[in-house]
Image 1 (cartoon, rainbow, N blue to C red):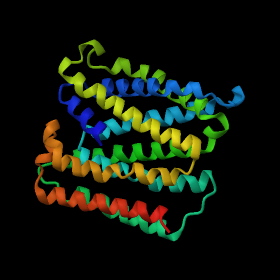
Image 2: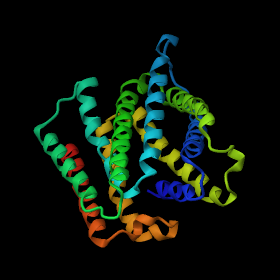
Image 3: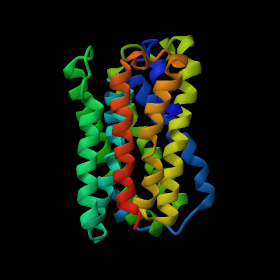
Amino acid sequence: MLGVLLVKRASTFGVGLWRTTFVSNVAMGLCFSPLLLLGGQGQPWTLWWQPALTAGLFFIGQMATFLALEGDVSIATPVLGLKILLVALFSSVLIAESIPAKWWFAAFLSTVAIVLVNYGARGVPHRRIGVTVAWGSVAAAAYAMTDVLVQKWARAWGAGIYLPFMFGLLAVLSLGLIPRFQAPLSAIPKAALPWLIPGAIALAFQAASVAYTLAVYGDATAVNIVYSSRGLWSVIGVWLIGHWFKNEEQRLPPTLLRNRFVGAILMLAAIGLVVIG
């Protein structure tokens, strides 16, 4: 949640979506490089498409996340919570895990949660909400597929080989964003750096903790129950400390914020149904 608020605050200085994505992805590549010290058994060169594919999926997820965050943080983050249900669905297909009936009820709760975080958004352009939900859903799907494939493939490679290669390639893919920059990296306002750099590092360590846990221990569904709780904490954070980051959403009507708070709780309830029992 802190990384999201920091990056959102940096955007108010005109850093721009593509420069923010580039800095964040390079930070991830750097944060994962020390894992090379762990080593691993590796795999034949004919299978190097596996970390490359997960890098590409994560890249799509990262871009979609920032496009969603260009809208409304307290909408985008609960929508990203759909990732846990998509992880369950993709796991059933790719790792042959059956889907209990309670998971379908969890999907219903998640739908109600999305309705709540969108209901009554007076004063917020409807197109902005729709775009935020759409990009948040794309990000959730891309990240969910990434998690399942990392669980499926990384253990055979070894975390010390698979993850540094995957996130190093992510940084390389980000070079393609340079032509989209509105100005060079050197032109980023100095006032934005105290927000942008810590935010990018926070997001990188968040990704590192999830990816390492998946690569070493597996069980993508259990891992995501903790990770997806960021939806609730984001709503609480925007409500309580959003003014510290000059986040305009903190000024939204109390009724709307309460709706989003209830929606975030329902999202957590849905996640709980997936992993408890």
